[in-house]
Image 1 (tube, one colour):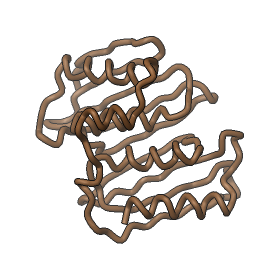
Image 2: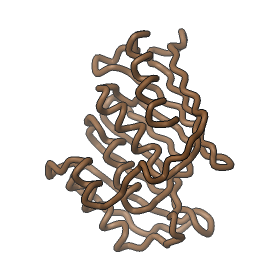
Image 3: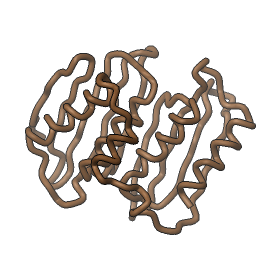
Length: 204
């Protein structure tokens, strides 16, 4: 794999490397955790037609956020230095210039609803005794903007993502999240039930 570009923008660092013939490994490191990081990142990738094949995200010591995405372009486009600089600029606008994600996507002309198809999605939430966070498992049909829309629901529900992994096989995706409240507590049964209903409303 060859490094295409590595740039710093205030507290965000982007590194993109090739992975095979049509995929890329995009690493994003944010030195200071803040609400809505994954929500904003996935919105920019969606706006630029980058499909997320796999993803791993985690928060280290409650501050340093490390996200790794394996992405490919829906139109078969190659990632150029100019493309990555544009992603950098738009992330900066969302993080530091007060631009809302809703306004940003409306301006981009992207609509998640145009990619939806009927599917019997499965959503499970549970609190394992071995960890102090809530597990969210989702199995649904893969489509552009899926991770963006899930992270939007979590953001609007005031639920923090501690970490998540995503993997797609034969157009069906399995997402696993570790979640908590802003007070670092596990979700209550009532909160889990409400979240499940919201997720199923956008996935089914």
